[in-house]
Each structure stands twice: as structure tokens, then as C-alpha cells.
Length: 479
Image (tube, rainbow, N blue to C red; front, side, top):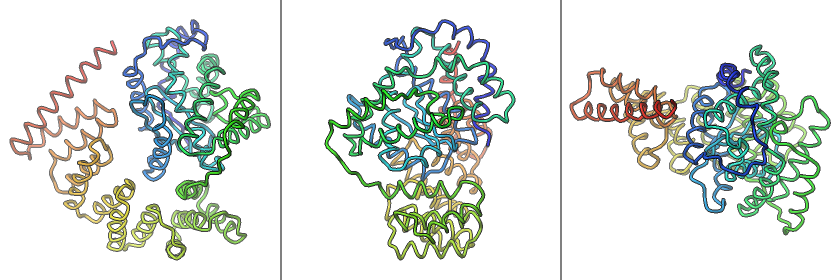
């Protein structure tokens, strides 16, 4: 699978400039913020998120994203003094990795989610990354490098990591070899790692997780790295892990009272869903069937949920429906079951039953954003654009910064033949994703649509002037 090809290409273009900046990198122990304000860090992070969101490896599954986001925000809520914002996202990649970018953007690979043996282990990695952000470790690592040099080096670092994960891309492989020295300098220092360990353990404890989860996960990573030195987990490449660090964590945890924390059901269900999407569909089905046959599970409901997803992926719809019925009898209570049931029914061409399930589910779980998305998507698929539009308008009053809802709104307007409103809504979706240029283009199309009244046309004109001014200001900052 291609991993971040655009970032690989960007890194290749910037290689010459990066070399010049890398030669004078200061020691990673530099403790100054080097003039990188939180606003500047946020803008840098947003620039890279634009690339990541457009890449096929960006895992835009609302249920998995919602779970990781809720887990991360539960930890971030205990940051001392607070933090302006965190955004957690998922990358579809079997490599065990997680990473923090400037401005509070934290990515987690699906491979790491599946490798975690408990929710506390997964929380430990997120708490560690959150602490890197709150302590501005990335900015401090660059000493007095300019913002432009930081942007260049960040591009190269991400590209180099992606290239090592994808030997099939020739340019990526060449880039990885040339950039190895720079990548090494981008790794967190051991002092920063110990600081992130200490603060992360505190976040875990305050959020109600078992702090031993961080220790157990990192111990396993260290053992894996020793066994497979030439193919160590990606996480170890940027986060130097030593026996000394593990011992220090163990000593800190030993001073805390023992706390046994049960995993949430969502942790098991999300991992089962991810497992069902791995490899060939037939292999995924066989794997879950073996677990059920041999009773190799802690939760029958979790395994059957994964089995149903694997059957659905393999187009064995009747068997998937049967598994959903068993899950109902097992009294699995989760919005994830409602979306799965609806997906099976839609694939079996029973749209009305799917809509009924999603409507009831959205009422039962009003805070389950993924369920709301699924309901609106089903209304669009059924051709009921007015109902879908009403749903987006209602939800946007509650969460006005939701890009996905604006994109759905654009689809609803398109079905209704309202071109001005379609392009206007799509512009807002692009803007929330950080694509200012694309947003301006959509508003230009809205102006030319010719099907809006005077009031709507005036709103488009005013918004277009505002975004053009913002675009001009961004161009001035970059130059």
C-alpha cells in the first residue's frame, strides 16, 4: 500500500534546502521555544494535515476516528493548565507507530491499535505523545532554526519515514538513504522521552487508566526491537527506547497504588473491526471463525462483531445478518452494532429497514457522531435529499465546525439541483479541512451558478472577499 506519496514527493523537492539547514542543527537538549508561537506551530501542523487528509493512507472511518479522538481527549482533559486544542487521527498502516506534529495533531497507526493488548496500553502511547506536544519538544529540538527550515525538515522527516515503510517507491527509497542523517537529528532526545514518560504516566493516572499499561507496551516494543533489529517498529525510530527508560517508568509506577482497569467495550469492537479489514476477506473470515470454534476470546460479542464485519466484506450477507441477530441476543449495546446492522441491510437492498435502524439508533445514541453520519448518508443514498439537508442543518447548529457535515450538505443540495448552495457548502467543508484555495474556487463556482436569490448571492460575495483576503495574508506570511 502506498504510504503518504505526496509527502514523499514534497520531501524530495525540498531535499537540497533541508541539507543546508540540517548541518547547523543545535543539540536536541535546547530548551528554548525558539520563537515558535503556539499559533505558528498550529499553522505548521495544519499544513501537514492538509497533505495527510488527501493521502489514501488517511483512515477516514468515523467510528475508529471517534474512538481514538475520545480516548485522546479523555487524557488531554487532564493537561495541567490546559491546551488550546488536540486533534487525533488514524493512519491505515500495519507499522507500529504513533506521532505528534506541531499544533497538537497526533496520529496513530492501525497497526499500533491492534498491537495494544489493553486499552491502558493504547492510552499510554497517546499520553506520551500528548506530553511531547504540551512540552513543545518538537519545536525545542530545532534550537534557533527558522520557521522555514523547520517546515522543510518536518517535510523531509515524514517523507523519509514513509519511504522506509514503502520500498516499492524508488524515489522514496533514494530519499530515505539521503535523509538518514537528518532524520536521526529529528528524533526526540532521551531527556525529552523521559519527560514525556513522566508526564504521560500522570495523565494516565488522572484519566483513570492503569499506568502499568505504558510500561508493558514499551517493554514489549523494546523486546521486539532487539529481536528484529533491522525491522524494528517505526515508533522506535523516532522515540529512542532504552532499558534505563523502562526501569525509570517501572520505578515511578511502583510508587503508585495498584489499579486494575477493565477495557471499554469500544476498545474491543474497534480492534475487531480493524482486524476484519486486514488481509484477504476469506482469511479474515476464517480467522474469526476459528476463534469462535475454539472459544479463543475474552468476549464472544466482540469476536462475533468482527466476524460479521469480515462476512460483510466477503459479501456473505446472509451469514453476516445471522451474526447480527446473535449479537442482538447477546444484548450488545453499542452504536457500532446499529451501523453494522444498517450496512448489512443496505447491502441486502433493504433500505427502509436500514433507515429505520439508523433513525432509532441516532435517537438512542445522540452523541454518536458516526451513527448520525451513517443516517444522513443513508438518506442521501435513498434519494431523500430534503431530509438529509435538514439533518445536516440541525447537526451543524450543534457542531458548526464539522467538515463532513458540510460535505454531506453539499451532496444534498446537488441532489436538489441547488448549485449555488452546493458549492457554498463544499467551500465550507474545504475551509475546515485547511484547503483555503479549494474553498475560494468553490465560492467562485457558486457566484457563477446563477440560481441563487439576491440575499444568497450577497452572502457568497461577502464570504469570497473574506477568504481572498485571508489567502493574500497567508501568501504574505510565507514570503
